[in-house]
Amino acid sequence: MGSYFKGFNNFEGLMGIKRKIKLLLADSYYLFRKSLVKILNDDDGILIVGDIGVGDNISSHYFNSNPDIIVTDVKQVFEEAKNPITYLRDNNPDVKILFLAEEFQDDQISFALNLGVEGIISKDVTEGEFLYAIHEIFEGRKYFDNYLSADRRNDLMMGLENNQECMDKDTIPLLNYREEQILKFINFGLTSTQIAKKLKLSKRTIDNYRIRLKKKLKVNSRTEMMVLAHKYFSKSN
Image 1 (cartoon, rainbow, N blue to C red):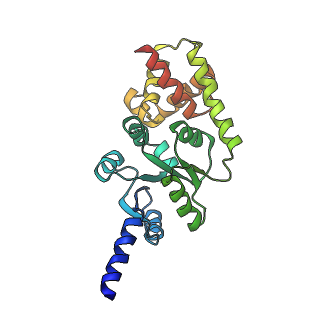
Image 2 (cartoon, rainbow, N blue to C red; image 1 turned 90 degrees about the horizontal axis):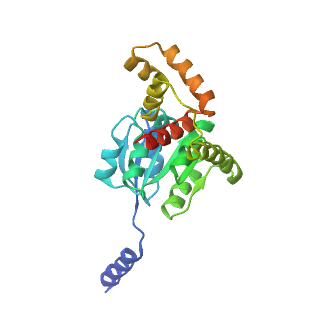
Image 3 (cartoon, helix red, strand yellow; image 1 turned 90 degrees about the vertical axis):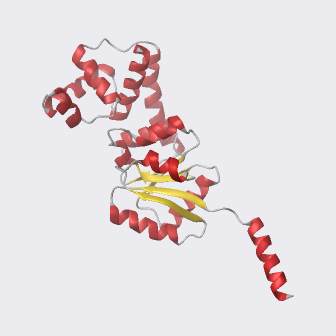
């Protein structure tokens, strides 16, 4: 009789239990990543379905494991030549992203906000806050570090919107062949070093072109320039 009720209670528990949060963890620093794995394994409500470096194929791992949330480093993704998160967003708008930030640099945070990510927190948060952010995002809410107040996020987004308005009004100045060539590589997400190799120019020359393009396009960060580059070539096609 006792075993019957024990089985019945287990059945009720299974019927009422919430499924685990499937999480894909991507960070290029092995020891840091493994530390996060230990923290996450202590939460019975989380199942790690992937533990990879940012340089690995995040898109492939995502579609193979179908996680609920991707936790990754904003700077590492921002500096990738081909940004995997943008690709995932374009192909699956429902993907949930929690970015970890070592420093809150405006260009990186603007980049993340422009992607419409669900959360951004400091790598210096407590274990409890880290886990809380994951559960909040899984439940359909957003979670941002205290440093990124609503006003601060609005200010960063306004900077991007102002530059987009310039493009919408066709006020972008004419670019010469080399400037347009470099802007196209920037649109692909290439760094100055990578562009220099492709064009067989020095990195310093590319950096000087970037400075001139910033002034010409009236942008203040790499992210703003990438947004304008994308719109510029979208209009050209």
